[in-house]
Length: 254
Image (cartoon, rainbow, N blue to C red; front, side, top):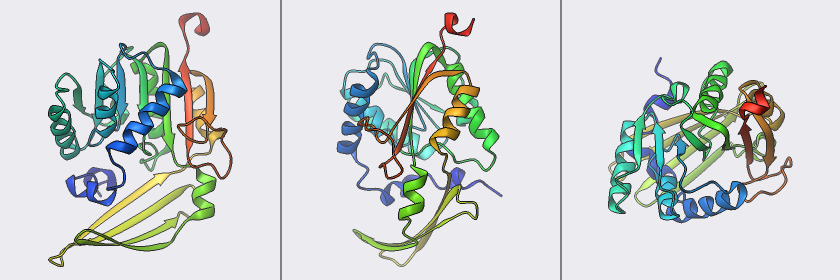
């Protein structure tokens, strides 16, 4: 059976999240700059870059060495179009599974935004992603991951939702796995011609403690947690779970 993430992220997927736009990406990037102060002249990797809205915002903010990795050829094509429109042809886009990041000691910063983590059924695969990020970072490099806040999702899950977006009707069903570690989402989209498209998503929700343990096991140091990209303290009702981790320097690793 083909994993959901191999067929969900086509161009049609972008119509499901029209509110996730360039303005939001620009706010996210401003918050990231305030939170971790990445060097704009050092290489930065957007892992799971999708259609490139954060890469566009990063380029506009003055970052000079940007790379985006994603598995979806369709979304990477959209990202290329968006970047070319603003003259950002120097931004590299790479099609790759995030479990096999093709870089070693290349980046000063890696970011994983908009819940681009937790897709795999085997938690060992998520661990391989984190180990790959660690390998891709230079010594002392920073990894920022922005994902779901498990407690908030469990407490506020909306099982059924119907929406109308322009000429499309969306019927959305959500449920938790039996052990409450995953959130499963099915979206049925009916266009004006009556054609139905079905999108499924399944994301593992880690607690801050679980993610910190995995990051440290992957070689990270100085792991800090926040409730959003704006840097608030993380709580059960926080908007998001944001974790910032540092790769150890040679001195740290002795």
